[in-house]
Amino acid sequence: MFCNRNPLKVQAAVFAGKDKLTFLDINKFEGNVFELLDKSEKYIAQRINWRVQFGKLEREEIPEVPTKAVREALVNSVCHRDYTNTKENEIAIFKDRIEIYNPGDFPQGYRPQDFIKGKERSMPRNPLIAETLYKSREIEKWGSGLKRIHDECKASKVRVDFEVLKSGFLVIFYRPGEKVTEKVTKGLVEGLVEGLVENQKRILKLIQTNSHISKKELANKIGISSTAIDKNITSLKKKGLLRRVGPDKGGHWEVIEKSK
Image (cartoon, rainbow, N blue to C red; front, side, top):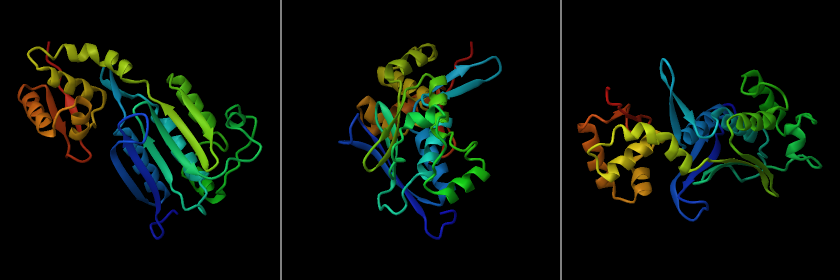
C-alpha cells in the first residue's frame, strides 16, 4: 500500500448535472497511498470553482469547498476503507456537490455525530495505515478526522453531510452554486468586458471562478463548439485579457486586469 508493487486504485468522475446520467470526465488513479491522496486532491482542486480575493499586497485564490476538509476526507477514506472488498474508493463531482466514498462498514452502534462531537475515540479499520499517516503528519490527531472536516466546513460556511451506507461511508460537500460564483466575479469581469461578445464575457467569468477549467468544460458550460471556444480564447489573448500559464496539462488560465 505504501509502495507501487501492488498499487491501489481510485475511481473519479465529473458529472454534468446532479445525477450520474451524463459525465464530463472520468478517470482512474493508481499508486501507493500517498500518491493516491495527492492525485485525488489535485483532481478535485482542478475541477471546482475558485474565487479571487484581492488583499493589500497580493491576490488570494479561495476554493468553493475548503481544501483542508477535502484532504481530510480523502485521508479518512483511505484509513477506513475495507481492502478485502473489490469495490474501490470513489470521487464524484456533481453540479451541486462533491462526494467522497469508501467501501467498508461504519463502526456498529455508532453515528458520525458521535465522533464529530468528540464523544468517541477513533476506531481505525486499518491501524497500520492510520499509524503511518499519523507519523507522516497526514493525520494531526487520532480520532479527529470527521470533526476537522465538520469544523473546516463550518468556518467556510459550506454544508457537509456524512452518510452511512450499507456498502460503505460517504462524505458530501455541497457546492455554493453558480449564483454565488456570479456575484463574486461580477465586479472584476465588468471592468474588462467593454467591446467583448457575450461568449467572451462568459469565458472570462468561468475562468475567473476556476482557473484550471478545460476548453471542453468551457464548451459544455456555454453550449458552443470547441472550435468556437478556441476562436474566442484567441481573441481574448490578442486583446491582452487572457493568458495561459504552464502547459495544457497541469497549467492554468489567468485573467489579466486592465491597468487603471
